[in-house]
Image 1 (cartoon, rainbow, N blue to C red):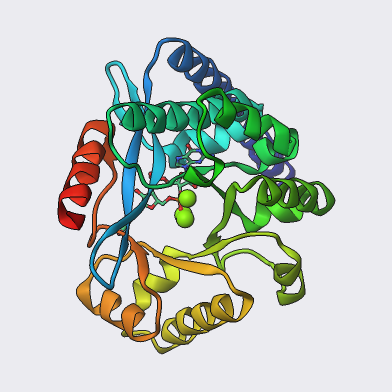
Image 2 (cartoon, helix red, strand yellow):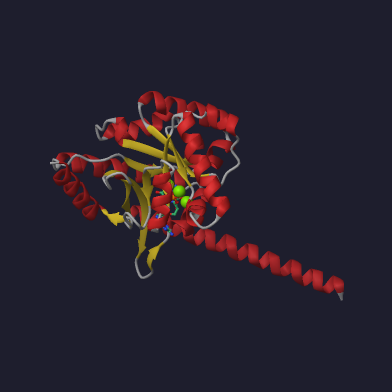
Length: 281
Ligand code: C2E
Ligand code: MG
Ligand code: MG
Ligand code: MG
């Protein structure tokens, strides 16, 4: 009986795997169709200063509106694109589109803020610094208008390559942020060697502030560490005023979250840029 059960379990897992492979293939095909058919767009989430609530930057976030399905979240399709390798052309499209948008804002007489683009591990492993630079140059942009967000995991996968690319990006004046900081396995000695400009504190820690003592400790320690290393620090996923107060009190002045602004389409992002000019005038 045990054997029969084992055999059945085996068949069950085989079917699961086959189903998953099938879903992967179908999604990969849909993603390629989506890119060719212009179904992707970028939304822009503000990064805001807690000192005067000024707009300091945007993060570009990929959105896929699949006909007949509505919005599909990047959490669902980015891992598959990473798996199949489609993330390389897709990631290039994202960077190119963010740069195209920056160029359009400049041409409209707006004074844009830097835009950050997420770079997946496989994309980083595949590219040289020149590959990223070429896309930015296509639009005649100053490199300091563009920031790349990478995760600790992306760096760890091929440390030598990552260090070389990041150093070259830094030399070109392209800013690099460590995304979801604190969730990976990076050590302090490795962080010291990383040529990055910014740490983004992961939302999971910010979430617990100020009621979870451990999260308070982690968040304030990351802020102090960033300061010590001469890095900028941004808190992700700030939803409540209590969280903003805690962050301000611990000298973290840059935040990104529902509290200060959700990701919005480019047209609304442009409105924020216009408002910013008026506020400064
Ligand atoms: P991420 O880079 O850490 O981006 C932040 C995510 O947190 C975004 O989700 C954003 O909408 C969400 N968020 C921002 N503020 C808040 C808040 O106050 N509360 C909550 N609950 N969530 C908040 P999104 O757009 O669904 O993206 C999820 C992840 O997908 C991103 O995490 C990033 O890892 C990946 N992703 C998105 N766009 C791209 C892209 O163009 N390329 C690559 N490689 N990955 C992308
Ligand atoms: Mg990000
Ligand atoms: Mg993040
Ligand atoms: Mg995240």
